[in-house]
Length: 349
Image (cartoon, rainbow, N blue to C red; front, side):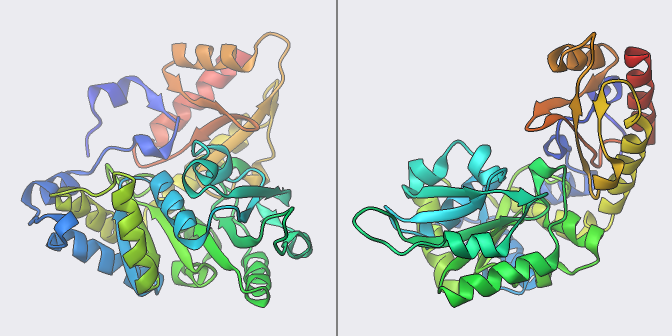
């Protein structure tokens, strides 16, 4: 697919959410057979939801407009007001989703530290609380993989399994924020279906590395999805002829998964090339997938000043938790990587 004029002018590393739909997606959208999804008769949405459930080994799926809504719906379904949810302290759904746990589900987050996204199972178990007049009941544990704010780290399967076992012992549910679960699968060699076994529910995004224009999918038990559909409607997420968007999601799942390894390779190349430059604090060995987050401490430039300098060189990136974030994706090619490396060298030397 040829780059647009904007994409040629700038190398956009702000996020993999900036990806444009492929020509095949656009064609599928134009030709999609649609109905009214709120009334339950959009066949293209139904196909996407069934496909997602099958891929993840769950009973049912639900198409939602965004990953944030997906996580919000899942937490609302699994919890009651005045309860408590265990989360990792840098979790996206705790730090970067506009406080929906307290605003929508009306539950208290209980953040725990981790080693690059992997919470200590013993600490998780010690943190589970029974209710009293003073304290809330712990009812849900949330995990994330890949872990966005830990530079796209892949949380080890043995850690996730240990947390699942703890949840089972205490009769708790587990929600899996799998926004980039296909990236985790490519990097680890573990099938997404195996990761999905960890969660009673799982959310994954179509609009990040898989390059669809809009949407995420929830998967889980049939009765969970039925209630999640009601919550989605209550949040304003009931859409009508949304098969137009679901059609792009189907292409994303069939065509865009295997190419994710290219994003990982480019991220590693970029990390290795800039790690030793003045002011950059980065361990390239930590770069497992398509996200690079690095600290920056330079006598001449602050983080905002560096981002401004990079923009002058037609490189777009973002400040985030832990420093500066670069994300590789379908619309970043080898030329963009070389442009970014050259820009860093010109600015920092």
